[in-house]
Image 1 (cartoon, rainbow over the protein chains, first blue to last red):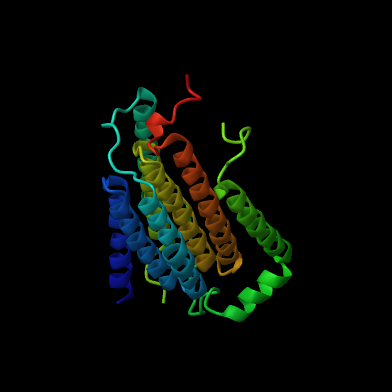
Image 2: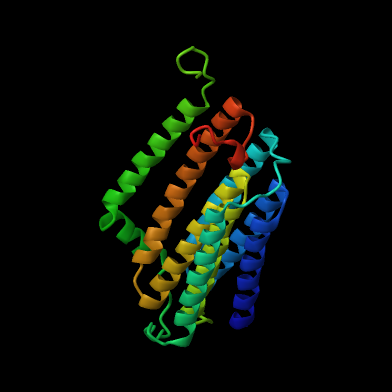
Length: 171
Length: 102
């Protein structure tokens, strides 16, 4: 059962991700991105990270994709010139493909990476209490920094989206 | 219940990362390029969660929590920049945004 679910979610994730890259229409690409995120959330559930799956659906699928769709709706992004790729782009593509194939081959054929045996113990992400305890003791400083980062990002977005009216700003 | 090996998760994560990278590399629309960037971030979080599950420590999960926070802030700022760019130049195609190039 778990194997079937894993295969299902993995295929959903990869096929939807390919759809993001290949779709001409930006709205369809955003919808494929949403499907891909649902697949990743399913994989998180399989890895016992229930909180993270929930947060991923809430933040990414709920907020980020909605924001993307709003911006696509706001800007008229259709059309554009036909594709012409520079030699640098083609070289980088070939290099990326070669690196990925080498990495996947090394990962799947050699058994360098020995995973520790999983006992019958529950996943660490499953229990919320130790998770929150770690978050607010060991990682208290990063939590504070994240809060400050969100504040800075909010102020930055307000400044960026202000309509520029005075002369020295608008150029 | 765990049902796939660590190798499988890592291969899947790498595949997802490369797909996002090709989205960044090959697409002309800035919004789709941004989506490819987000795909790469999600792929890295998948690898972190898999490592955390197989290692039996919660640190990877906590890092993913931080990554999600930073990604949310990044998306907000990035889209605001794209909207400001569109107001100035009336396009979001990357091959037409080349005034720093020449």
